[in-house]
Image (tube, rainbow, N blue to C red; front, side):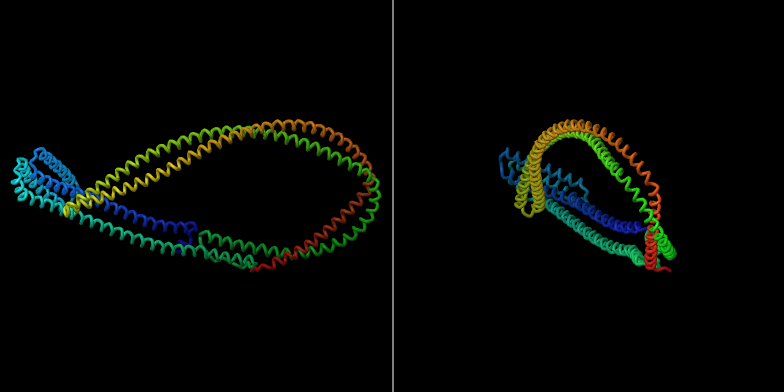
Length: 571
């Protein structure tokens, strides 16, 4: 626990995430194992059980058809029909040999191999007996052929059919076992996933609560200590010790409190000394202020008389200065307006170039939108072609469904002997229905794509028209910018002329103002001596008053500082 306590906060959070990731991977592996196992069982059921069962059913069907052809052959004396029936028998026998070859090439167990061997032996005997019957029927010795068929062919035929029936039942039992094994694996995997999920939730929640308390409790302690420090209690001290961020934060907090204690103590001591010094200085400055005020009143009366003599000159100089300032402002404003006009002309020219570039881009966009519309139209044509292909697939599925229905009818006619083939026909019918449903879904999607393609074509055409309108608008903006540039250039030229005239007037007014100022300075020299003494007295009086006010303020600040430091509790 001490090791985890010294981990960084990020490492603690990553540890929780890593633990959850391990359980997530475990759940994923269990699911993957289940899928792979189920896929193996499904492949075994189809390739090793369903397909061989279908082949066995076809062999049984071929044997029944051969029996029906033999019976028909024994009932007719037409040579041409006899030849046709023999060809049909030979064709069915060839199909049976191909199906047997497929069965022998499949991976089978010992019992299936034995059953196939027994069937092959019975089939060879059956074919020899059948050949004897065919030879008799070919010579129109039908009665003898029928006797041989009943006495020799029928028993061996029944034996062959029984072997096939046993092989079919054996495959069905194996398929059932495979299905049960698949269900068992699915149930086991489900319980494993549920168990892993529950364990992961419990363990991750426990670790999360543990890490959360390990992080939040020290933070709450620091928060409480900070609250006490804010209220003035500087005797607080953090006791949490760790090498993580919270431990360093606690150590830094303790250092900060120690430094604050030293600062507050030093400030408190200084405030006491400052308050005493400020009171002494305030008393001295009040005495000096009273003496200086008497001297300033006497000298001010002398300065007032000299001041009246130059007042008229000051008013004249002031008027000239204000006039010079106004003319200078006019000149400066004219110059600024001229520069602004030139800058506006440059901006207008830049805007004109930008509009031209925008018009080029609008033309490029118009071209691109046209090309996109053409591509979408071609996509609509391709969608129509795909729709025709889907119709063909739907027709094929319907025909397959019809064929499976006919096969089911034939199997029903065969009775008990056609039960296995009926199962295969039903599977074929289901596959045909699924193919038809998939084709209908594809046709619906293609129709939606065609509708959306039509909407896209209409949108592209509208976008092309909007781009054309945009090009016309940008051209109008380009002409307006050219007109603005011409007007601004004319205004800038006129403002430059006004600016030049204003600068000449400013120069003349400055010369007049300089002359008046020289006369005013001469008049003022006569009063300077008296004013110097008055000014010095007034400055001394003001300084003394400022010192008095400052000492009072300093005394007040010292008292406030003492009150503030008294709020803090020190060791």
